[in-house]
Image 1 (spheres, rainbow, N blue to C red):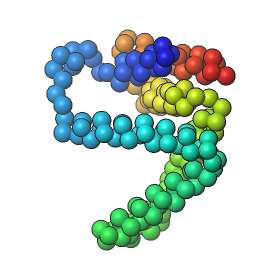
Image 2: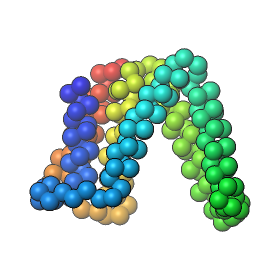
Image 3: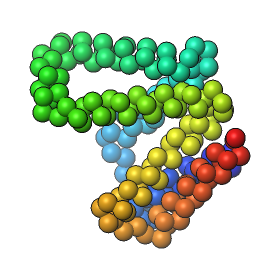
Length: 168
């Protein structure tokens, strides 16, 4: 629990631009949607883990992909936007296929992880991807971090590695 808490605190520090902003927090219109989405993502992670344990990781990912494809296709057809699928595939085939493959690979890896470790630990480690995004931002975009962001990055990466090591 301590390591999971440290990961959350580290991610918070990395994403915080400065502490002075905390004094004047104003809720944006989309904040409620973000909080609801966070709750749904947590529920989805739990359902993926439980379903992967009771059936198989490949089945839960296949089933979810099929259901989502049908829902999105029906929505696009309802909105008369079905042609956008063909357009996007024509203009950006590598991007569309690449994202599809990588996203499914990530969910399959997550699902397999839940077979061997507690779901809370697998979710905590997988949510540490924020640290990877920051490292990529530093390497590729030459971004500069403030001290508290570097500290948060170190806490997040260290806690995720220790959590993965101890859970094994």
